Image (cartoon, rainbow, N blue to C red):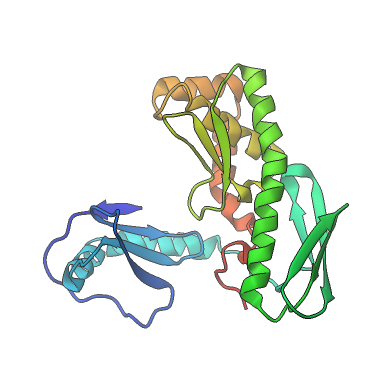
Length: 249
């Protein structure tokens, strides 16, 4: 992610590229560009920012953006059928079979014993994706909440609460008030990588930075953290396309 104040005028890149978007935000105080793991580029700007200033900002950071997009293309998830036939959750060693039960009316999803059953009008792909995403968030809470509690007890950490989100760029975070936010997509990663991320965020309850003391704290609980951190960075390749919607049919 890059952020910066505005500068001089330059031509904006093609507005015909659907992988680019500009979003105005009431909370934005400066321009920010994000390159997601799918290769999509989002530019967040303060309300009423002149287009010429956005163009200048993008032109100034063209090389960085293109480098990040090239990295995203190299690690992009292969096209997948939708709806999925099954959903693999390595973090908890689960495989859920997806059964489209058919029917009409509002979509309804139920799950039990490795089977996700979806009834209703499945022609509404947006509603179907949303139903699966809500299921993923709930399953993530059921799996990750006790895992975080156990990890905190094991190493003597304390935190205020845990929240589950579906984020495009972060696996987790810890607020100054002790709220640990975990990405539901962690369920698509191997258990050792998930455990490392939990330790990483718990360590932030003691060190709200990435200082030497922070990494010493992480290393004391997870000696293999360097290797696992590299695997975590590559972990977006394991997230199915339907989780975010990028590249879906």
